Each structure stands twice: as C-alpha cells, then as structure tokens.
Length: 171
Image (cartoon, rainbow, N blue to C red):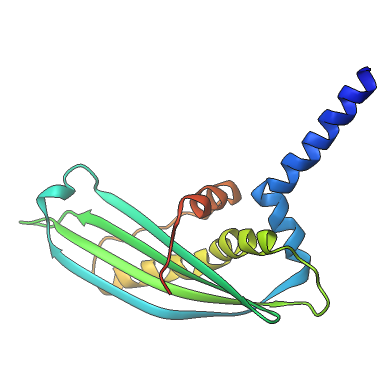
C-alpha cells in the first residue's frame, strides 16, 4: 500500500513540474534561438509633479504579448518607468517607455507545446530584453540631465514573477 502512495506522489510531482513556468521554459529553450532584438518605440516625458505621486516615488510597469508564425516566435515587451525626480525649486515627474520586439527561430522539426512557448515568450523574452531596457533607460536619463540610475540585473525568479503579473500588451 505504501508503494502506491509513493507512486501517486511521484506522479503528482511530475504534474507539478510540468506546470511550473521554469520547467516549461526549459522544455522550449533547446528548440529556440534568438534571431533579433529591435526597439519598436521609445519615448519620454518630463512634467511637473502631480499630487497623486506623493506616495510612490518610483513605479515600473510591464506589458507583454507574443505570437507564433511558422517557425518564428515573436515577443513584444513594453517597459515603463516613471519616477519623481527631486529638482531645485520643483520636483519633476519623468516617464520613460520603450517597446522591444524579440524574434526567436524555432528549430525545424521541433515539437514544443504552445504552453511551453507561451511561458518562454513571456519569461525568457523579458530576461533577454532586460539589458536593452537598462541601456535605454540609463541613456535616456543621462540625455535628460537627470540623476543617474543604475538599473539592477534581473534575477530569474524576479523575471518569472513579473512575467506572470504582467498585463498583455495590445498588438
């Protein structure tokens, strides 16, 4: 009898791993290679401080969508940074946005589930796009003569959490 319980818990463990986002990403990863990262849109705005910003000095946002066509997987990620920047006389609100498109090529004959591709497109694309966002944000702030910000490295578990919480970017 104990053996059956062990067997059931083993199959429960396998099922839990299959639905784990990182396990699904690992299933897709060997079958995909990054082909291109392209900046589709970049913008900034500096305005006077709004009253509703007093509680949150820095906010970030993330929107992601993906699509698959033949042997290509495309992921679009929109990063949003908005912060209150202290200045002499009057604080300013700065908003910086950038949308990147990441294109991946699926190996010929590869069989990868749509669920695994979806998790890959959200998590791995976020992880791959992060250095481009860091560079864009840091350069934009420097060009605006605003205080420098070193955007931290993105940790894998953080990418998983953010990708799961991200809203879907409208195409």
